[in-house]
Length: 73
Image (tube, rainbow, N blue to C red; front, top):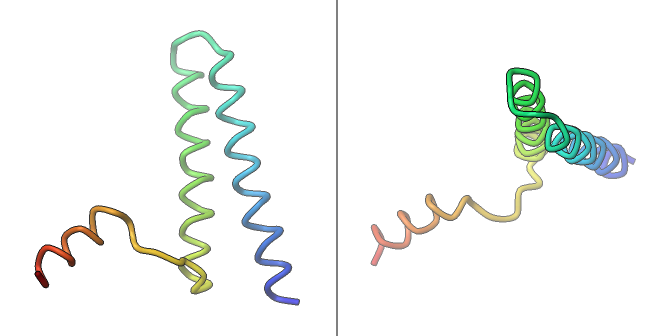
């Protein structure tokens, strides 16, 4: 049951971020648009952080993965 709850919550954050980004694109440049973009980024980051806390991240970020490969090679 926990996996299902996690999945719905993660998808809800990602969908909310996508909706907010679409809304921000329609706004004219300015403070309101910037605030909407920051809010969308925060929601996306929250979904990633929550995935990390739940232990469900499949791979490392590319930059970290490249550094560990270069250091070991």
